[in-house]
Image 1: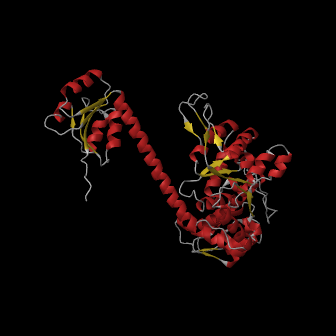
Image 2: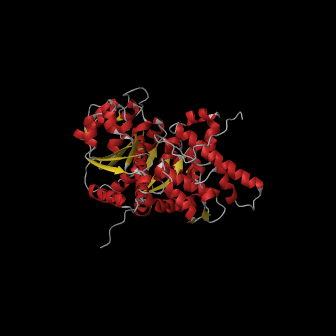
Image 3: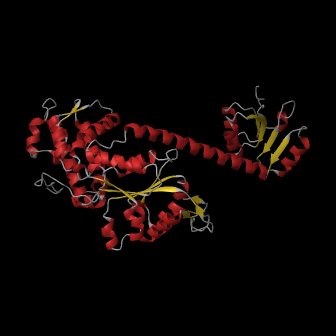
Length: 476
């Protein structure tokens, strides 16, 4: 038996200002509604051009849509009370008139609904992308140590247990968090990521718990907190060791009770959130120094995964190098698909203080430099070179001439110098620029030119096999 198909509601919008144009935009494309006309006395109103774009008839007089046309609803968004009374007097039998606060309410509800649809579509797209990444891009490694980590991930993922991921910067802690989420029962909702180093104590509280309108200066509307957004999903607290002490107590209460209360609110809400935290700090030392709460540590430390540095899993370096080579090919749009044995040996021998992030940057930098389909030793930074700086020159192709060779050497010098200054200043760009004796903007331009990321050098010593290297001062 066929279902009865209801004809669309035929609507006339009266008023083509901001409200009318927004209403027209929201209703356009809805199969249950047909906008048969827009009435507006001002030919320059924004909704007039929009209606013509949608091929909706426009008239200066609403009566032209009432003579002989089949209309179900007149929506008056002009706010004109006299016009509303005229519409009620002149409307044909069976036609409903909506105006004033009723029209405004419909507009607000439609707008909210459409925004939710847009958000849902975005989340669905993100989820599909993460599903794709989980199959190919989430590379763990083949060493025994990394396979043991993969087993731990697979065991903890289906549970609601809080997970603490520990390891140096750049070892792939967020990658592991995403793997856990993608293999959990909450994979259909996006994982919410919070960088605890990016917020002050007051700001991180408002971000995590939300606030009510008027709770403080600048709170012009209600804001939903990230913990509430992560209901029945996962929240990832990156660099949790940098969270301010006063905020740690509030996060502890949430972990104990599962309850949240927005700033300025009197209502407590209960949410179900899976918490994954990560840190590159020795939290035990921070506890002794009074910088981290012991009770919060034990709450977070229910299940720990330690990510070893790259230097402790050298057998995985070729696998990661070719993985990042594939990414760099697509990004730089160059057909580079080989790494020479000499270059690979240098990659494997290096200590990688920046771990996977540094390896990814080095591979991309080499792809930019090479003029062939292969990364060779001269395309790697000097810090990876087994010989001194002069030994690199004979390896340079001679076809391009002296100036090309000079440019290549200068590029390597700049790369090495910037990396060293960043490493010696813990990844702080301002301090590194001062130490180099150049303006911060000049230093940032060099970083951008050589695709160097400052965060790869935070909290890590600069392991160099070229200790005699010393950049010249700008006065030399």
